[in-house]
Image (cartoon, rainbow, N blue to C red; front, side, top):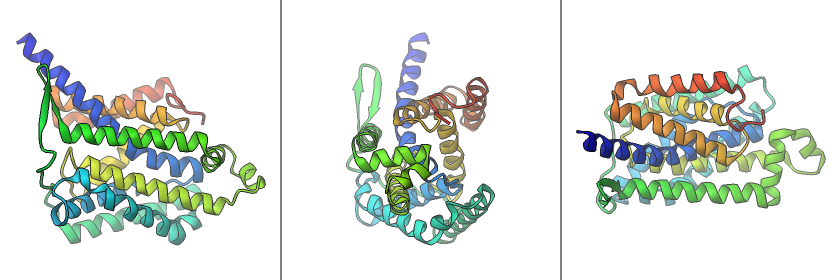
Length: 291
């Protein structure tokens, strides 16, 4: 009995770490837009839900596995980010937070009802063929599709971190998170900077939606969970670094996996948000946040 529980615990921890790696990608898109443009986007979870649906569509019509769908989802959602910025976000950046919340909640309701009208309420899951396999490390089973999803997420976060720290544009984005007026006075076109940030933010959403589909099906209400989860991760990590987002995401991934695997899947939200409230009570600025 003890040996079986030990194997189950190791399996659950592995699953939680892999899940946290994918959560980090979803949360990073939110952190970028909020940190650089100071835009409160309450529709972030619905964009993730939409990305999951598009991964499902591409899986059914073109590919046979969601791991292959990012090649379409990334450019599609980059374009959606640019269009949304030009049409809506650009007008909201200097608006009061209440106006930002009202407008993005409107987008949330629109996307949720659009998904319900197109795909109905039944869960949609992609077919699995190419990567629906696993291998063993001792007694622990490692699903190949979920491992690939985590590796893609980690490589993307590494590239993003290098971009933010080593390129002129990335440094301008980080500086904008601290003082956008100073960045503007230095000659940086903040409008173009925010446009690119919105595109990158939604491109990360497109990729994360594809990867999350290796873990679960999608419904029109999936955006609620991912919206709350990504905001909780960003609040826990603070707006400091990619490393902070990754660590906070793994904490939530482990809590999610342990609650679902060792307790009751219906109680996972109790554990997730109870942990979130506890850590923020101890560290109100988050684990690594500057503000």
